[in-house]
Length: 212
Image 1 (tube, helix red, strand yellow):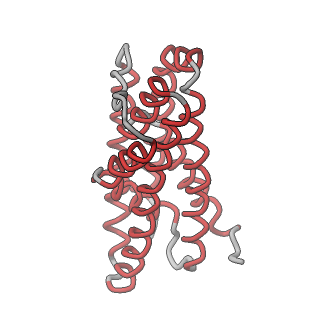
Image 2 (tube, rainbow, N blue to C red):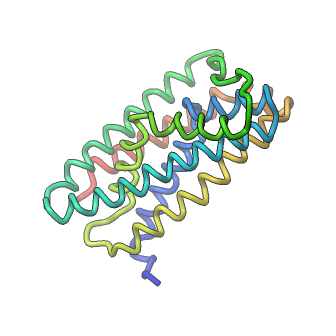
């Protein structure tokens, strides 16, 4: 069992970034919301499980590739930290722009699908074909993996993200099949996006200014 205490602050920051990122209205979230509203919980859950599968495929590939890259090139972490920090600031900009928008964009993927199996593969395709997904995982790994951290910390980082991903994505499917929750979210989305913008700015600046 790894000693988590020395690495807990960076793990907590990475987990917080992941939690906010997966809860932000993006292609996958809007697809889950739209499907849950139009077809109900079972359909939304099927699509959410496909998104989760795609997310953790990217997580494992990123973890394996990043470890090899760091072993081969000592300066690779510098590049990853800069890329991750800039990506966080880009998310902050998008969240701020969404907060200034009066109305939410229409949810995607609300067309009727012939089966739950096809909805699952649709969710899988949404995440596997999204080039930002791999970049987001690189950012999270560089944010949550301190220099010289043991490999077991990587497993803890990804495991924590997996648990949160299951809760968030399936939670969206469950909650947004209820009309009152959907209406409440749309009323409060500007405040939610404003809080996201503030957190992403903080995390991005911290990552860019962190000592290696």
